[in-house]
Image 1: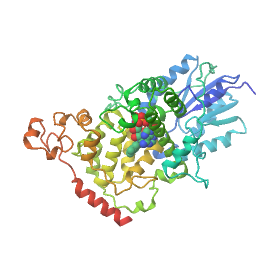
Image 2 (image 1 turned 60 degrees about the vertical axis):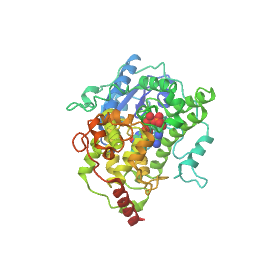
Image 3 (image 1 turned 30 degrees about the horizontal axis):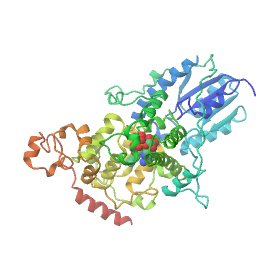
Image 4 (image 1 turned 45 degrees about the vertical axis):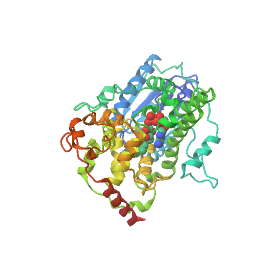
Amino acid sequence: MSNKPSLVWLREDLRFDDNPALREAADRDAPTAILYILDDETPGDFKLGGAQRWWLHYSLKALVEDVDKFGGTLILRRGDASELLPEVAKEIGAGAIFWNRRYMSWQIEQDKALKEALTDDYEVKSFNGRLLNEPWEICTKSGGPYKVYTPYWKQVQQRDVRDPLPKVQKLDVLSDSPKSDKLEDWDLLPTKPDWAEGFGPVWTPGERGARKRWLAWLKTEGAENYGEQRNRPDCDNTSRMAPHIHFGEISAVTMYREMQDKIAEREIPSDAGQTFLSEIAWREFSYNLVFHFPKMFEKPLMEKFEAFNWNDDDDAFTAWTKGQTGYPIVDAGMRQLWTEGHMHNRVRMIVGSFLVKDLLVDWRRGMDWFWDTLVCADPASNTASWQWVAGCGADASPFFRVFNPVSQGEKFDPNGDYVRRHVPELKDMPKKHIHAPWDAPRDVLAKAGVKLGETYPKPIVDHGERRKEALARYQDIK
Ligand SMILES: Cc1cc2nc3c(=O)[nH]c(=O)nc-3n(C[C@H](O)[C@H](O)[C@H](O)COP(=O)(O)OP(=O)(O)OC[C@H]3O[C@@H](n4cnc5c(N)ncnc54)[C@H](O)[C@@H]3O)c2cc1C
């Protein structure tokens, strides 16, 4: 083994704990250089969205400080990774190159080509640092991919999840580092206007922020009652770990194994803990789907939906994005998304159903909006979830099951607290009328200071009519 430097290319694994590629480098008798490339060219439409760029800035800032503690520099480069990785490897005279694997079609293509091109000159090794199980490891009896979640989850439960690797505490970081871009020069943060000003108070990107949130959440009522409360946006006590997992500031393996320990130690009730583990597996199911069916990024998995007659309604779409539809639970969700870069899962389903089945707008427009505005936007989870909502994906919610935004609000936000938090115009509405203010008596509206059509919009569509219309259009493609 040479003691030429090892080059670790970090991508969606911005952490020192349970990081197989970094661990491999740290365990060698050779200095390590750590590289991050901002590649806006290779991913095409999946170039990082605005909210993710905000997150990436602060996550890399934290990582720069951590690498600095080892006496080295995080090498930052911007451009096509297929050119930049070989360039940096050459500049530092690397002997080996390590990375953790990625699973989207364009990522696999790039990694494969790089591996082939670099193998003659370097030792190139890749690892699984992102998933409990890689997509080819969980198969049906006939060897194909699962399209239904329940049997997929059963198989996951039958397999052991490996131990997390120890955190890299000692690292001989290459002192004579090559040139690096300045993070500030990447302009990842919005300025005019600073639409992300609401993100700072809510999130702490970076590995330390991830660990802190995870450990704190494990002690909350949200973890203890996860099974019952995970559907309640008013309680707002799910883990909010999604962006941390997406950027790899904590690994799925670490979270899964630590939750299993909490269940075994009876610190978290088994049903709550198991439900949480099954949600981690939903994430993996999405990875499994897009790995085996990459056309899902653009087309419905159920082909008949290609013929669906969507409305090309820009005004309705804009009202949806701005949280001005006149349906309080929908507007609350869309405004939470804008101010926090996050939306509760139940409300994601409600706003998704509303866009597709009430506004009759193509699910791909909603998917793109989420891509730009969610801090946790993930090509696999976002694509698979939107197809699920639109009824055209694997194991999808059937199209004919149309969510009623009023009864969904009444069921999952029974006192209206979620709506009041995000739609302040309705803060004085009594719980009886908060999810359908158009049905409230005049004196109730007056007392709450609500003038429909002035202080808060009237519903932009009639749910009953649109439901019928959606089902009729569905009949056309059936
Ligand atoms: C239309 C739509 C779009 C979505 N887009 C994304 C996305 O871009 N990125 C993303 O990470 N999740 C997405 N989800 C899934 C889910 O809404 C979020 O993962 C969850 O709300 C994140 O909040 P949390 O971390 O508090 O979740 P928790 O309830 O605390 O769950 C823990 C973790 O499990 C995973 N998880 C939970 N629910 C799901 C699910 N239904 N599908 C996949 N993984 C899940 C996430 O990694 C999450 O952080 C989407 C769901 C819908 C309906």
